[in-house]
Length: 262
View 1 (cartoon, one colour):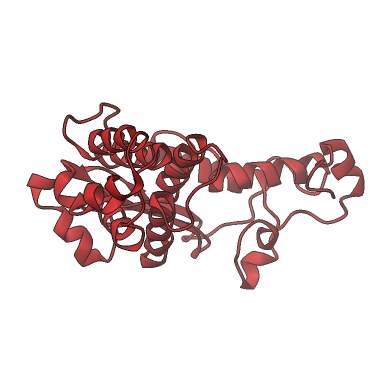
View 2 (cartoon, one colour):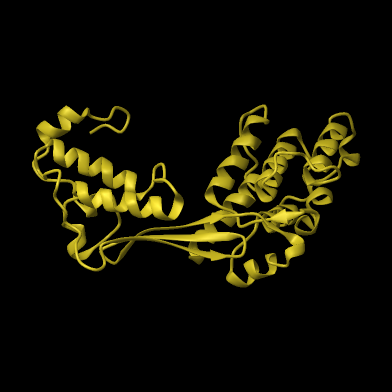
């Protein structure tokens, strides 16, 4: 099946001789990997996600199970009432709260099929950011400070300012540019640099040093944050690219490391 042109459900049904199994959808092993994904399994996961989040998650575990179960049912390989995950373990969704983040774990028959971090802003004056460091998580502010060390001598450009603003928005949870904040400083620097000699230009390090102190709130850097910052940096670059060790790269590195913590 071509990734560029997925097969239609009717074509899948005609060609499918075996049901889609859990091992085809998730990185699982043992007995679970060989079990077909059934409609009532998907229904249980949908109910579990709704209990925790208030709704099923777009592109999440329940959605993946529902898609596989629907194909299996349409192909006549399972019935609508089939349930293959039974017993006390069944399916489960748990959310562990830590300062500035929620660690979500989804399991099927006792096997973890998905674990990720959903970050939430935390005010600096609450004193909780230090707890994030003890947990091993890297915040957006820390990632910005890392960028100031690795690419600090780079003159601030429009793309840098856009990336910094996107990072500040995600760290604080507010779309407003904070007067005198990181984004405001970066925008002023980019404007000034556009008409300034190279040796007199404002550097990234001058804006991003002590970013964790300058931000009124901070949170754990996630993959969603990294994608948002990367998009902002690319959109504001004439070549539609991002600096390999710039702001977006630093947020992405932090998000990748955070995923290994859990």
